[in-house]
Length: 213
Image 1 (cartoon, rainbow, N blue to C red):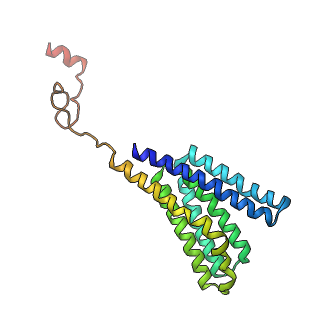
Image 2: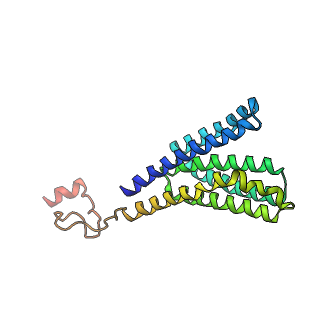
Image 3: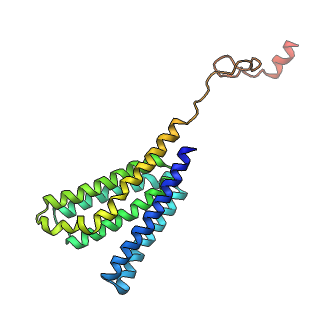
């Protein structure tokens, strides 16, 4: 019961994060680049967000491993973008923040059915993203150019993700502690059904039944 409640609490927190952080990202994009370009960008990450969230809710067994791999690739991308300087800092910060947002919401939806996998991947995504951002800022070729990663986009997008992970991990622990144990032995007084080890006796063939009579 507690585990089920915690799963829905995590789902509600994920929805709050999706609405709040999504509105914040849309407001930033409305100022720059603004206009039709901002609308296209919002549609570009809104559609994958809707598809991944629907798959996480409807097909969690297949979607979970795919989200885990995507999260690992994203953390590597942020680390390379910050340390090597593959992209301009304003492009890398916005792209990585939006991708983290999309994956975090999808993983939060996955937590309704698979809280353990969702919690572990969310924890790795949130902590790995922030560590990769700070690491890229510190060891990059121009550290001052990458400070915007921490100040502008990474902090409001990445900090709530480990908190969501903890909710689903606690829900998973609650579900495991209350899981009933499998009974192996036959219950006493069951009328002699079984051989004492939970196994039923073999059924007699029709010929043997006549022989006993």
